[in-house]
Image 1 (cartoon, chains in turn brown, green):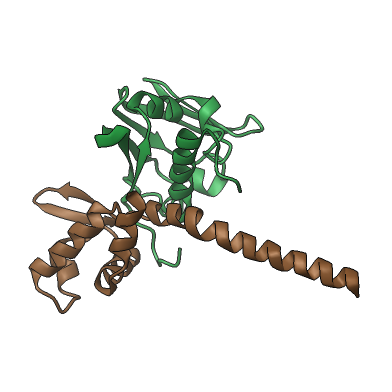
Image 2 (cartoon, one colour; image 1 turned 60 degrees about the vertical axis):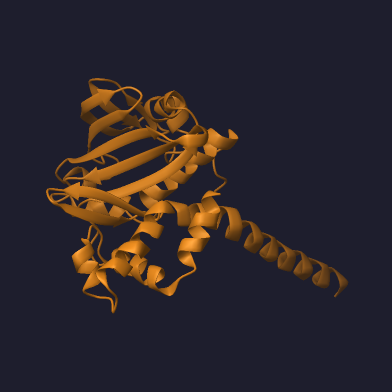
Length: 105
Length: 148
């Protein structure tokens, strides 16, 4: 369930772009983020909401402003669960193949 | 991370299927922390935040600023395991545990007041806190710390 939200949130170019902007500089307001996108304030808000629901963006209030922070933990968890597992196997399969071929030779 | 300057406020969140009491125990007792926190044996009491490395050396020793079990813990942060980091000003770490639906809790770690500690800010960003939190989640949900 958690993973679904993260994959859905990442399956959109604008949202990935927003994450890249926050990666460069964290703790930004909606107004700052909006000024870098060809999109209405409402549109940006909607995308931020999806990122927030997926846990990829954390927000903090600072006076009257709402600041947006990139939270990389869910991406790490996806990496551990869905990428590490398969790439490790792939690498060890290749290592095995190498051993076998070298034994034959 | 490839960011030019690390942030003076960093916020990390993770959802963990555990009770607030279990999470609190996992972040305040050395038997737990050494399994997911780079081997550090951390003890958080109402007075002090103390951390020891696997060899017994002091990695941290700062005052506890708020201690509200099992919801909120605030303590100072100075990385004593590295002389360059130890020279920098103290920063602040806030742990917040909020119960959610379905037996989950949201754990938020805010590391801020890093203005006087740019090297520390860089060292805890990127993999720093992220590995701690993903390791903590793995430990509480599966009973095993992450491999690596």
